[in-house]
Image 1 (tube, rainbow, N blue to C red):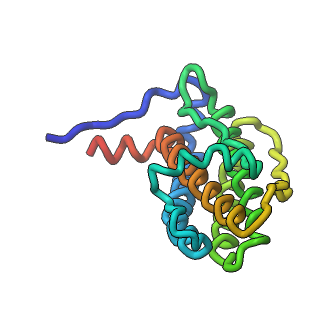
Image 2: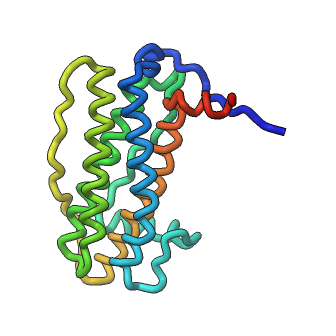
Length: 197
């Protein structure tokens, strides 16, 4: 027995969302987010050498105080476009969250021994920001200025703080990426066609 999953109708900007160019950007963005999510475990493994810092551990919640001490801000809360959340708001939150994570990775990468995978991840995040900002430009009808990420001033006293910071940034990026996938999925018109067939 097949179930049909449908996203809620988009109240504002639905004509824009149905635009083929916009849909192409949504699908390209989904591909980039999925690439980012797939690369996070390898990136984590390449630069985190402290055995107690595991990517999908239930103990990650215990590091909240450490995140505050180091200076890692929380990511924006993403919400799917609805009657209460505009398309522009959703895309803006995606862009801001991705820029935050790129800046955090840039800041911590300077102190990592093996930063190749972090650099690659930052490039993918940059590409995704460009796609999100292109969609945002279509919504706003004006140019979206893409700020260059300024490294954030993290309070990293020693190697353990660097390891914890990199770990927490990747954990937070993974959760943010999963929320981004959910938001983009709600905008992807090809999903409805696939589930109906």
